[in-house]
Length: 293
Image: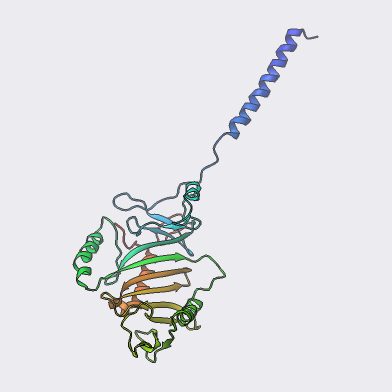
């Protein structure tokens, strides 16, 4: 028969074991959640990390110094979102599967190169700004914005967009866009009231409401390219949009009308640039990056 002090010792040992186990459980529960593995980043000669993510259907690694502004990922608050919402928002960890909503860069039309900070193209761009724009000379740089398309139900064409634009012009400004008999650089052209201002009976002297509009359809009859251009400004400009089905993206380009004859080349060159940024899901480059510093 155990004495009283032996019983107390056994009780204390059991209590100590219970507390020890409880302490272990507490310790485990307080450990931070396992962090997502840090992705591999391609870097430039200055050590700057690329911007990574998934654009449409492709994983990409955009060379550092190329993006004009910043990349926006799906779910990021908009520029004009409530500051309180922005402050609380936490973007998911970066990866090559994180969907990119949009980003922008500068593309040189004459040779297919892109602007990159701390690279010769930065000096070239500044020089062209200083020596061409003030004198009304054609500016060889195009502003490019790329948008990932993630709604499987949304059509990858401008059919409804163009039709709605024509209807709005007719309803709000009494302007009919008339298809021209001759194509221009392979584009079907529409001119406001056949290029004539109905109030004066003379050619339009202002393109505020009457820009030339141009389209290109695919074999199925869907509008894949839409361009509208000024025709009376000191430096005429074009706003050019196109879809790419393979990537599931929409691209916007703005440039001097001088370069309109090269619209097809521009679309091809921009896709070459994006293709050079493709990577595996682990970040391995699939080609030589255009714009790498």
